[in-house]
Image (cartoon, rainbow, N blue to C red; front, side, top):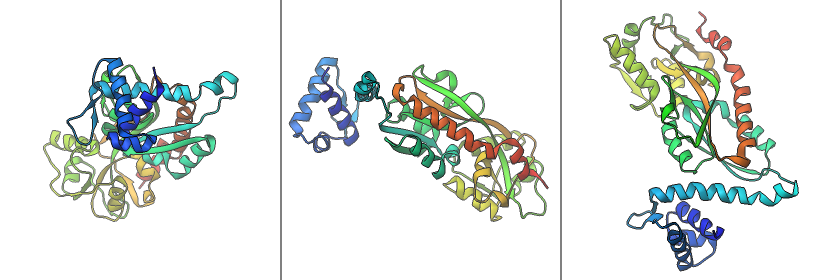
Length: 315
């Protein structure tokens, strides 16, 4: 197979047009079109839906992209491996879910870059459910996720993960209710909590869904809700006394506002979760840097272990 055809496939997908891919590759548009056509003829199926704008891969195109990215990355390091001069280089694209972001902040990313100076690091942030499809299609190489209870990994049931994805649990976590440290008296039941203003993420957030379900089970609901679109802003609003919230314990511990909030002891409002690193089974030469991500996250999590978290619950 001609690697130039694979390069054209990736360029068209990234640029979402033949014209843009031609500019990236320094070719004419007809030349790029011919390469894609030859590849489609060899495979026996269309790789792009020409009826959409911007141009989108077909399902077969997504699968071909995943294989093409892996193949070209492995070929890129082939010579060094044979001569014994292998050194990690090239791009590394890591997805980081919002709930796990504090464990891979600026200092941790600096450490990762220093350990692999020849790697070009790209960070993609989002919700786990947004990142998992990117990982499956090979658009990112690994993802760090805050996974939910009941066997939820990357936003789906663990049993539904394809064999091509390998999850590894790095740390435990819990979703808890939080309040401002300045309050004289905190609610001790879900019914009492529901009488207070709540600072929550928009509908669709796992934290909010867990709280709503528990409130409904106890015959109450959150009526006064202030919606915010960022987890750190949510903590800051709670710390400022705007209301109460539902948040990941480790996110609280790593927040600049950690000394102005308190984790509440409300029966039933403590859901076990996990920080999970998910890689593709075909990661190959990227396994070293993915392993390093895991080591850095575990080290960063030491400051937010359960003993430290109890400090936020102390009266």
